[in-house]
Length: 200
Image 1 (cartoon, rainbow, N blue to C red):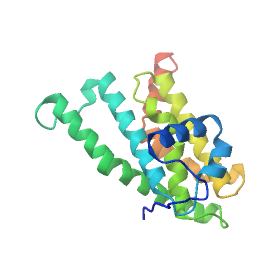
Image 2 (image 1 turned 135 degrees about the vertical axis):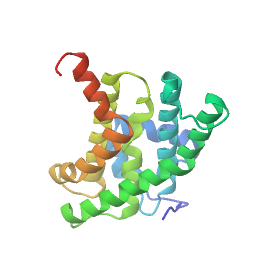
Image 3 (image 1 turned 90 degrees about the vertical axis):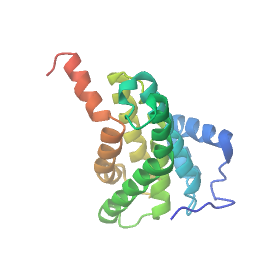
Image 4 (image 1 turned 90 degrees about the horizontal axis):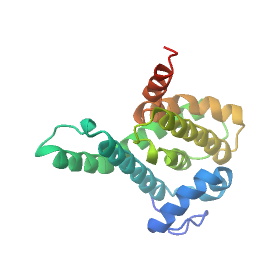
């Protein structure tokens, strides 16, 4: 399911510099990035991007809230290391592809004339870009970055699958809620935020 096209249509740069450039571009020029940076059949750079985002997020989560480190073996440092390896090798790729599978099923219903599965995988991966700082223990910040990630998913689906904003919004709602609201903690952060200002 994961392929690496040597010369993708979007001409994306590989390596750390390419990752950094993709991260900046998707944050500041999302329409242009999704239009030019997502190439059919070129999932691997998106997968690497998603793994890096997830790993940085979990690293921040563990650094700022050590009580979130699972008690696995050999103390907190070893447990954190094992957890990060699991995130990079298993959890992040699995979550990305499960979310893409769900997103594809929804797109079949909402966007009959659409791009392929590989493009959907890439859109979800790059939409997660703001979540690198979601591990910082600030409910307001986490709400902002997860909402921004959800908005990027809508923009990406609209641009890549050449559909309307409304159709993209409908298609993105459930996957965005599950991924950014649950996995990256947007919903609990929102609950903490409104609790802190006395609304509940």
